[in-house]
Image 1 (spheres, rainbow over the protein chains, first blue to last red):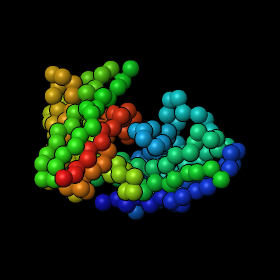
Image 2: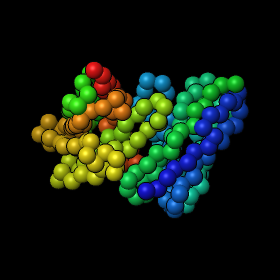
Image 3: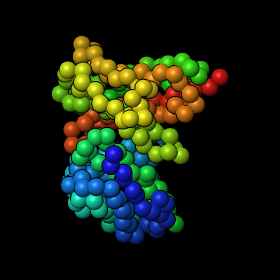
Image 4: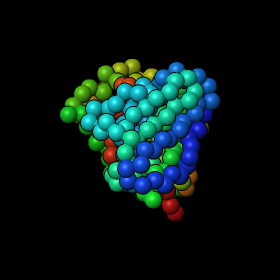
Length: 107
Length: 116
Protein backbone atom coordinates (compact mmCIF):
# COMPACT_ATOMS: atom_id res chain seq x y z
CA UNK A 1 0.00 0.00 0.00
CA UNK A 2 1.13 3.55 -0.70
CA UNK A 3 1.65 5.54 2.50
CA UNK A 4 1.01 9.28 2.43
CA UNK A 5 2.83 11.37 5.04
CA UNK A 6 1.83 14.97 5.67
CA UNK A 7 3.83 17.58 7.54
CA UNK A 8 3.48 19.40 9.74
CA UNK A 9 0.53 17.85 11.55
CA UNK A 10 -0.29 21.24 13.09
CA UNK A 11 0.50 24.64 11.63
CA UNK A 12 -0.15 28.05 13.18
CA UNK A 13 0.00 31.07 10.92
CA UNK A 14 -1.23 34.65 10.74
CA UNK A 15 -3.69 36.22 8.32
CA UNK A 16 -1.82 37.23 5.18
CA UNK A 17 0.98 34.67 5.64
CA UNK A 18 2.15 32.45 2.82
CA UNK A 19 1.57 28.88 4.01
CA UNK A 20 3.11 25.68 2.66
CA UNK A 21 1.89 22.17 3.44
CA UNK A 22 3.85 19.08 2.51
CA UNK A 23 2.77 15.60 1.44
CA UNK A 24 5.14 12.72 0.69
CA UNK A 25 4.21 9.42 -0.94
CA UNK A 26 6.02 6.18 -0.13
CA UNK A 27 6.35 5.44 -3.83
CA UNK A 28 5.93 7.16 -7.17
CA UNK A 29 2.36 8.34 -7.73
CA UNK A 30 3.22 10.50 -10.75
CA UNK A 31 0.77 13.41 -10.42
CA UNK A 32 -2.27 11.51 -9.14
CA UNK A 33 -2.55 13.61 -6.02
CA UNK A 34 -5.46 15.70 -4.75
CA UNK A 35 -5.78 18.16 -1.87
CA UNK A 36 -8.89 18.46 0.27
CA UNK A 37 -10.00 20.97 2.86
CA UNK A 38 -12.21 19.78 5.69
CA UNK A 39 -13.84 22.16 8.14
CA UNK A 40 -15.38 21.01 11.40
CA UNK A 41 -18.62 19.11 10.83
CA UNK A 42 -18.42 19.33 7.03
CA UNK A 43 -17.57 17.02 4.16
CA UNK A 44 -14.11 17.37 2.62
CA UNK A 45 -13.94 19.85 -0.25
CA UNK A 46 -11.76 19.26 -3.31
CA UNK A 47 -9.28 22.11 -3.73
CA UNK A 48 -6.65 20.81 -6.15
CA UNK A 49 -6.75 17.77 -8.44
CA UNK A 50 -3.98 16.07 -10.42
CA UNK A 51 -1.35 17.89 -8.32
CA UNK A 52 -1.83 21.40 -9.66
CA UNK A 53 -5.28 21.87 -11.22
CA UNK A 54 -7.54 24.25 -9.33
CA UNK A 55 -11.05 22.93 -8.81
CA UNK A 56 -13.83 25.20 -10.10
CA UNK A 57 -14.87 27.81 -7.55
CA UNK A 58 -11.73 27.54 -5.40
CA UNK A 59 -9.89 30.84 -4.77
CA UNK A 60 -6.68 31.35 -6.70
CA UNK A 61 -4.67 31.78 -3.49
CA UNK A 62 -4.59 27.97 -3.36
CA UNK A 63 -2.05 26.22 -5.57
CA UNK A 64 -0.40 22.82 -5.77
CA UNK A 65 2.89 21.52 -7.09
CA UNK A 66 5.09 18.44 -7.20
CA UNK A 67 5.33 15.06 -8.86
CA UNK A 68 6.52 11.56 -8.07
CA UNK A 69 6.72 11.42 -4.29
CA UNK A 70 6.88 15.03 -3.09
CA UNK A 71 3.94 17.42 -3.21
CA UNK A 72 3.06 20.82 -1.83
CA UNK A 73 -0.08 22.82 -1.22
CA UNK A 74 0.48 26.57 -0.97
CA UNK A 75 -1.88 29.24 0.29
CA UNK A 76 -0.44 32.52 -0.95
CA UNK A 77 -2.18 34.77 1.59
CA UNK A 78 -3.91 33.04 4.49
CA UNK A 79 -7.49 34.11 5.18
CA UNK A 80 -9.54 33.45 8.36
CA UNK A 81 -11.87 31.13 6.45
CA UNK A 82 -8.92 28.87 5.58
CA UNK A 83 -8.82 27.47 9.10
CA UNK A 84 -9.40 23.76 8.52
CA UNK A 85 -7.67 20.40 8.25
CA UNK A 86 -6.04 19.68 4.90
CA UNK A 87 -5.59 16.19 3.47
CA UNK A 88 -3.66 14.90 0.50
CA UNK A 89 -5.01 11.86 -1.33
CA UNK A 90 -3.39 9.57 -3.89
CA UNK A 91 -5.36 7.83 -6.60
CA UNK A 92 -2.51 6.41 -8.63
CA UNK A 93 -3.11 2.85 -7.47
CA UNK A 94 -5.33 0.99 -5.06
CA UNK A 95 -5.88 0.99 -2.22
CA UNK A 96 -6.37 4.71 -2.53
CA UNK A 97 -4.97 6.49 0.54
CA UNK A 98 -5.16 9.75 2.44
CA UNK A 99 -2.44 11.49 4.35
CA UNK A 100 -2.89 11.99 8.07
CA UNK A 101 -3.84 15.65 7.65
CA UNK A 102 -2.43 19.05 8.55
CA UNK A 103 -4.51 21.12 10.93
CA UNK A 104 -4.17 24.80 10.07
CA UNK A 105 -4.98 27.34 12.74
CA UNK A 106 -4.63 31.09 13.15
CA UNK A 107 -1.83 32.42 15.29
CA UNK B 1 -26.43 20.23 -10.16
CA UNK B 2 -24.64 17.16 -8.82
CA UNK B 3 -25.70 16.19 -5.31
CA UNK B 4 -25.14 13.15 -3.11
CA UNK B 5 -27.78 12.88 -0.38
CA UNK B 6 -26.98 10.49 2.45
CA UNK B 7 -29.35 8.93 4.96
CA UNK B 8 -29.73 10.13 8.54
CA UNK B 9 -27.71 9.37 11.70
CA UNK B 10 -27.73 5.82 13.03
CA UNK B 11 -27.43 4.37 16.53
CA UNK B 12 -26.64 0.66 16.71
CA UNK B 13 -25.77 -1.93 19.32
CA UNK B 14 -22.41 -3.73 19.18
CA UNK B 15 -22.59 -6.82 16.97
CA UNK B 16 -25.40 -5.48 14.80
CA UNK B 17 -25.22 -4.14 11.26
CA UNK B 18 -26.29 -0.97 9.46
CA UNK B 19 -26.98 -0.08 5.83
CA UNK B 20 -26.24 3.46 4.69
CA UNK B 21 -27.59 5.03 1.52
CA UNK B 22 -26.26 7.66 -0.87
CA UNK B 23 -28.74 8.95 -3.44
CA UNK B 24 -27.24 10.75 -6.41
CA UNK B 25 -28.94 13.47 -8.41
CA UNK B 26 -27.78 15.53 -11.36
CA UNK B 27 -25.99 12.60 -12.99
CA UNK B 28 -26.30 8.85 -13.49
CA UNK B 29 -24.40 6.77 -10.94
CA UNK B 30 -23.45 4.34 -13.72
CA UNK B 31 -21.20 7.04 -15.20
CA UNK B 32 -18.64 7.06 -12.36
CA UNK B 33 -17.24 4.98 -9.52
CA UNK B 34 -18.68 5.67 -6.09
CA UNK B 35 -16.26 5.64 -3.15
CA UNK B 36 -16.87 5.49 0.58
CA UNK B 37 -14.69 7.15 3.20
CA UNK B 38 -14.61 6.90 7.01
CA UNK B 39 -13.85 9.88 9.22
CA UNK B 40 -12.95 9.94 12.87
CA UNK B 41 -11.47 13.22 14.12
CA UNK B 42 -8.57 11.53 15.87
CA UNK B 43 -7.82 9.24 12.91
CA UNK B 44 -8.44 11.47 9.90
CA UNK B 45 -9.90 10.13 6.66
CA UNK B 46 -9.77 6.43 5.71
CA UNK B 47 -10.61 5.09 2.28
CA UNK B 48 -13.02 2.15 2.53
CA UNK B 49 -13.60 1.11 -1.07
CA UNK B 50 -15.40 1.75 -4.32
CA UNK B 51 -18.16 0.30 -6.44
CA UNK B 52 -18.71 0.56 -10.16
CA UNK B 53 -22.52 0.85 -10.28
CA UNK B 54 -22.57 -0.11 -13.94
CA UNK B 55 -21.45 -3.69 -13.34
CA UNK B 56 -21.31 -4.03 -9.56
CA UNK B 57 -17.54 -4.48 -9.42
CA UNK B 58 -16.12 -3.56 -6.02
CA UNK B 59 -12.73 -2.94 -4.48
CA UNK B 60 -12.03 -2.64 -0.75
CA UNK B 61 -9.19 -1.57 1.47
CA UNK B 62 -7.82 -4.65 3.23
CA UNK B 63 -9.03 -3.61 6.68
CA UNK B 64 -12.61 -3.14 5.45
CA UNK B 65 -12.78 -6.36 3.40
CA UNK B 66 -14.90 -8.16 6.00
CA UNK B 67 -16.53 -5.06 7.44
CA UNK B 68 -18.12 -3.24 4.50
CA UNK B 69 -20.29 -4.38 1.60
CA UNK B 70 -20.92 -1.95 -1.24
CA UNK B 71 -23.94 -2.23 -3.54
CA UNK B 72 -25.84 0.01 -5.92
CA UNK B 73 -29.37 0.26 -7.29
CA UNK B 74 -29.29 1.88 -10.70
CA UNK B 75 -33.09 2.16 -10.86
CA UNK B 76 -33.08 4.56 -7.92
CA UNK B 77 -29.63 6.04 -8.66
CA UNK B 78 -28.54 5.09 -5.15
CA UNK B 79 -25.41 3.53 -3.69
CA UNK B 80 -25.35 1.62 -0.41
CA UNK B 81 -22.80 0.53 2.15
CA UNK B 82 -23.56 -2.12 4.74
CA UNK B 83 -21.34 -2.35 7.82
CA UNK B 84 -21.48 -5.59 9.77
CA UNK B 85 -20.44 -6.86 13.22
CA UNK B 86 -20.32 -3.31 14.52
CA UNK B 87 -17.94 -2.35 17.33
CA UNK B 88 -17.06 0.93 18.99
CA UNK B 89 -14.28 1.30 16.41
CA UNK B 90 -16.98 1.74 13.76
CA UNK B 91 -18.33 4.87 15.46
CA UNK B 92 -17.55 7.49 12.84
CA UNK B 93 -18.93 9.67 10.08
CA UNK B 94 -19.16 7.93 6.72
CA UNK B 95 -19.09 9.74 3.39
CA UNK B 96 -19.89 8.66 -0.13
CA UNK B 97 -18.02 10.46 -2.88
CA UNK B 98 -18.05 10.39 -6.66
CA UNK B 99 -14.79 9.70 -8.47
CA UNK B 100 -13.81 11.57 -11.60
CA UNK B 101 -10.46 13.32 -11.19
CA UNK B 102 -10.22 11.94 -7.67
CA UNK B 103 -13.19 12.44 -5.35
CA UNK B 104 -14.94 15.57 -6.55
CA UNK B 105 -18.47 15.51 -5.10
CA UNK B 106 -19.18 14.28 -1.58
CA UNK B 107 -22.29 13.46 0.39
CA UNK B 108 -22.90 15.39 3.58
CA UNK B 109 -21.87 12.41 5.68
CA UNK B 110 -23.77 10.16 8.07
CA UNK B 111 -22.85 9.69 11.70
CA UNK B 112 -22.93 6.09 12.93
CA UNK B 113 -22.76 5.58 16.68
CA UNK B 114 -22.18 2.11 18.11
CA UNK B 115 -23.08 1.89 21.76
CA UNK B 116 -24.69 -0.53 24.17
